[in-house]
Length: 340
Image (cartoon, rainbow, N blue to C red; front, side, top):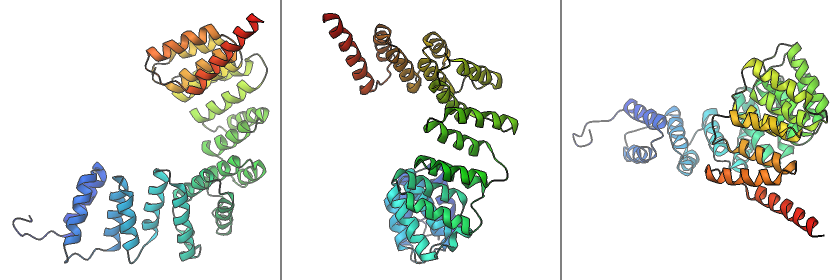
């Protein structure tokens, strides 16, 4: 069309932008932006500029997106949202927080009235990753002030946020403010209690989920399995949990399988751990391999651990250096005790 000197309309550019965004075509996105900038007759709308932002973020060109963002004379909620999510996606959590703070300063908090809940979820994640508890509490305060703190899509993130900072009372307060609870919210509560070693509370929460007929997912079970591995009952609760997992058809889930291997290892039931491991179809599940190796080392089965280590190498599994060191130290201590 350039060679024929035919005009390219904004609608045509929009179609090309959508195609580059969908295909994640970074080269095409770069060429398209240059082409648009050379067209002096194009007067892009805010919606058009937001689409350009999304295209560059989707194509991994965050620096280009930021340059375009800084040049924009006007920005709306979507402009800020695209950039905030872009920085979270590349784990630049500090820049995410910086942008959010600037946005709030300019809009004086009113943006939260219409800002999508998932953006707040991103900001809370950034607060956890940067250990910025103060900002997270301010966000919670704003949500409470605006009547959004009982939004069930936000509550799970708030419970997780307080749990990561070991503020279980605050997390439980958020939980108690909800009139109804879903899988995400219950699982967040269970994860918090498991992290703090409150295993019996984990079991109580799990039972309460059943009484409320709340669906349990793989993350729920993997957390409860950690609690089972933390109590000294000869693996009884772990076996009961395994039966529940089989009953609802989650025994093939990789997170659950890893949790089962780890749980049986902690309960000194290595044969059960081996049976679960042997049933794992995806033998590239590194976490399950590591859980099995840790089980051998934890239970003093160093010969089996060494054999398993060679099996991991033969299977092309990348082995954590810390696990190799743990096995080396354990074997050295055994050799030293025999000499003495």
